[in-house]
Image (cartoon, each protein chain N blue to C red):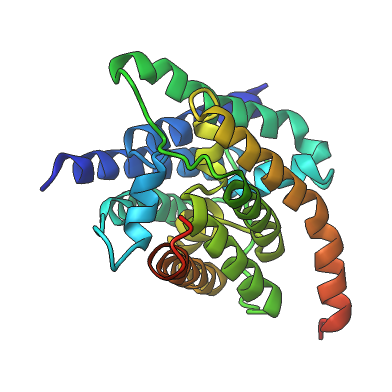
Length: 141
Length: 145
């Protein structure tokens, strides 16, 4: 089994443990788009402190782990048009669908939520078709 | 205070998991979606790994009435499959595939994502700002029963 897969599994276990802590500790579903979106559109300002502290944790731990890894490259595209289009689609889409990979994917599917399963099928299928279209047919990414 | 500690701990575990699993590397995410290219199954291991503690947590949740810090636990999931769920997820999926970033990793890579990440984040926040308007419009187009 390639080392990347093992790290994927370990990382997944950490992500799931985070979700378990958030659920059993605070009664919340760990959905990144909902936590960010609630701060952005004001719908979650009553729990703003909790959301901000959560996001600080998300951003901070990679900083603390970085010294053990050396250089980390996100390989993010430098095509600004693609970045803007993708950001808008992710922002609008996750808020209309009320969830993303963490909320619908990890938290929803693990409780066999029909909405979580349908959403996950939709975004994986759309993502896969998108990559085929934009990479292999149009060649823009 | 306890709730903030829980939130920080949960966020920290989430961020650490995204980092060590390689999910902030956009090529790994696009590699998973690109079934006609050099397909990379790492994301399936991440998802599968995350399901295990989460499924256990849902089992424990069914035996409890409140969370450890005394807050209400989430109700049973809605079963309603509406147009917003499908349309939103399809939009999200296309954006996810275009750059290889979803909301969680976009925050996890804040310190090392560079200017490309900031452009993506600014657009994502913009999208989140216009989403409530669009949601209301969709609700008017297809009134809820």
